[in-house]
Image 1 (cartoon, rainbow, N blue to C red):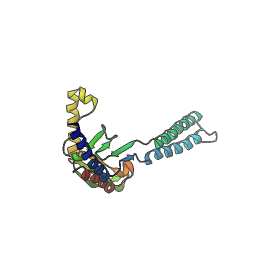
Image 2: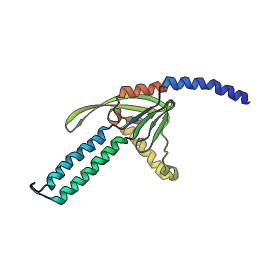
Image 3: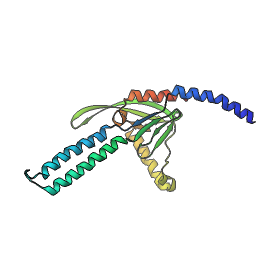
Length: 207
């Protein structure tokens, strides 16, 4: 019996190694550094404004308000710099699964074999009066995502409410898709690259 198990393990080890090699290395994608840099830039502008308000020669001189703005600005700059150095992981791609640690409202882990459809959608909208086009990755799963938060597990009424809410978002806002990502804005990768990496791992898990 032990010999049979050893033979099976020896036989599956090369197959597993081949699957990992065909899927490619594990990938971690972090939040775009644009957001902490925006916070740092806003803090810098506010700091200059605070110094101007606190200066004795300024019109409407108010030392207390100026000092307060300067302190808040310094806190924003320090916080933004810390955020920049500790950007959260938004996506993990391993040989077996797609992990979205920061997906609202909970962490999502999807085995590659559970993805039924993955495709790109181009959306056009207006922001501040300017016409903008964005590319999104839309994912449809073979089975709906389970409610894995602690509150749903301990309170069935909340679980029913949460399931109804997520189904409404899926059907009315996401067009029937289960997951909706904007890789360019979230982690500075285009949709075609993201889909190609996903399909590479999906194909490796079919065998």
